[in-house]
Image 1 (spheres, one colour):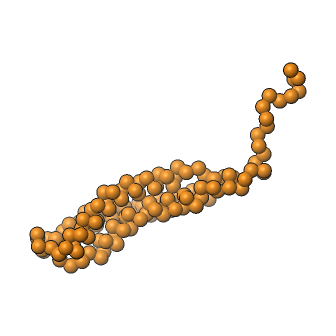
Image 2: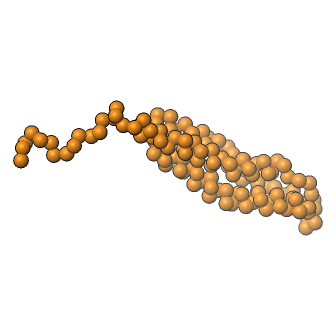
Image 3: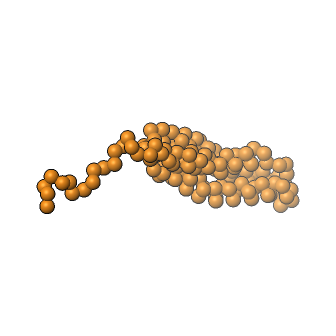
Length: 129
């Protein structure tokens, strides 16, 4: 056994790594923007979406089909969209912070915003009773 011979290979130099595998210094921006927007959008969507049931107060059980369909879509999006929003938001933060994952990180951060925005659009465009 030669004492001058290393027992393990030296680490691969950072300068020779693939550029897509280098650390992305701007990886925090998309999840942070999504987090800030979600802190405003989620409470607004939940409050207005749950308050939208009062749109049926004037018509009782004889509401138009368009109104009941919109209300069903709002409440379904509030429930199932919460899972999508939370999953996409966690994924945007949990992806490795390398350049390889930057596009997917931006897309998942944007995807986390879609359900609350969709609920707000539906609430503000409710059809007449």
